[in-house]
Image (cartoon, rainbow, N blue to C red; front, side, top):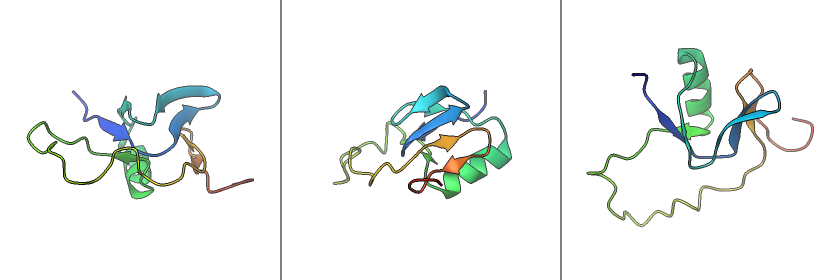
Length: 82
């Protein structure tokens, strides 16, 4: 089974179709997509049950959602017209 990640910021789209929203699990189509989404902070590796203890960080406080990351190469929008 391919490794799953959690959407940490925005949502992942393919055209107008929403593939995953913030907090949902997502499996990237390939390594290039995975690397692009990881580097932009759109997806993160899920915490294991062992490491899920409260570390003082709030899951709801991940910064502002300024756009979406399209699976078709759109990237994380960084404001209007991005």
